[in-house]
Length: 375
Image (cartoon, rainbow, N blue to C red; front, side, top):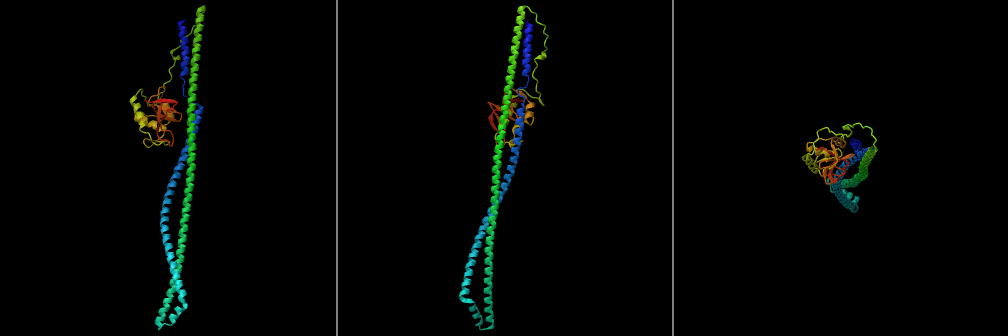
C-alpha cells in the first residue's frame, strides 16, 4: 500500500512539474501587436526628427543670411544718409543758381557780352555764360540721378528684408508644427510601451494563476486517490497493479543554452557591467546608437556594458532575451527585459536605461517582465 501512495504522489508531482515547466513569460499576441504599433510609431517619430533636423539646418542658413543682410542694411543706411546729405547740398546749390539767374536775368549776361571792349573779351564772356548753363544742366541731372538712386536703394533693401522675414516666419511655423507632432507621436510611443508592459504583466499573472490552479487540482487528485486507497485497504479490496513510472515523469525544465558559454555567479563580471552602465549616465539617446559616451539606444547600452566584462550578447532585445538565462532572483548586472526594451538592473528596485529620444541615459525604477543573466 505504501508503494501505491508513493506512486500517487509521483503522479501528482509529475503533473504539477509538467505544468510548471511551461514558460511563464510567453509573448502574447496582443504584446506582439502593440510592439509592432510601437515600432511603427517610433519610425514615424524618427522620420519627423529627420525633417526637423533638416529644417533646423535651413533655419541656421537663413539666420546667416539675415545677419549678412543686416550688415548690408547698416552699410546702406550710411550710404543713404550720405546720398540724402548730397541731395540736400545739391538742392541748396540749385536755389542759389535760380536766385542768381532770377536777379541778374539772361539780358544782363547778354549785355555784358555786347558791352565787351574787344572781340576776345566778348568771346570770353560768351564762354562763361555757356559754362554756367552747362553747369546748371549737369547739376540738375545729377540731382535727379541721386534722388532716383536713393529711392531704388531703399526699395530694394525693404523688399529683401520682407522676403527674409517671410521665410523666417514660415520656418518657425514649420518648426512649431513638427515639434508638436513629434511630442504627440512620442507620447503615443510611451503609451504603447505602457500597454506592452501591462499586457506582459497581465500574461504573467494569468500564467501564475493557471499554474496555481493546476497545482491545487493535482493536490486534490492525489488526496482523493490516497483516500480511495485507504478505503480499499480497509475494505480488503485489492487495487489493480500500477506499473512503475519511469524517472522521466518529473522532467527538468529545459535548459536554455546560449550561443556562447554563460558563467554562473561571476560577481566581478556583474560589478563590471554595473560600473559600465553608471559611466554612461547622461549620454544622449539615439535610435540605433551604439557608441559609448556619444549616443546609445537601450540594447546598445546593455550590449556595450556586457562587452566591458568580456561577454558578447546580441544587439537587439529579443536576441538578448533568447541568449541568456532567465532568473527569478534578479541581481545587479542582470538585464531587465520588457518587450521592445532592455536595461541594466543595479539593485534596490532600480535600473540604468537608455529610455527614449530626448531622454539621456538615466536611473529609473525597474520595469521588467523578465530578468536575464549572462555572468
